Image (cartoon, rainbow, N blue to C red):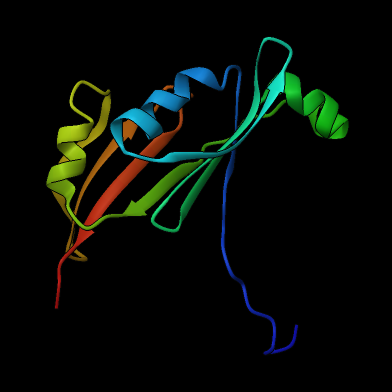
Length: 133
C-alpha cells in the first residue's frame, strides 16, 4: 500500500435483531442525528446516525439476509466494544442515567476517565474523557 493512501473514516455497522430500540440511545440521549434510514417492511432495516464526526450504523439481521446473504447464512457472533472519546464525561454520564453500566466510572492508568454501558442492541460502548495536557 502506498503512502498516498489515506484512511478517512471508520463507521461500524452493528447487527441487531431490531434497529428501533437503538435509536433512543443515540438520538434521544446523546444527540445523534439520523443521517439515513432504510425501511425493511414495517420496521427499519438500516439506520446511520452521526454527531461530531462520529458515525454509527445499525442493520437488522433480516435486512442483512437480503443485503449480504452469504453473511446471513453464518452464525454472527462477536464481542465488539465501541470506544468513543468525548469532551465531557460528566455530560455523557448524566445523559446515560438509568442505562446498564458495564463498567462504572473509573480513571485509567493512561489518564482517561471512562464509563462503559450496554446499549439496547447489546453492544458495549465505552465513553472516555482524556486528561488534557
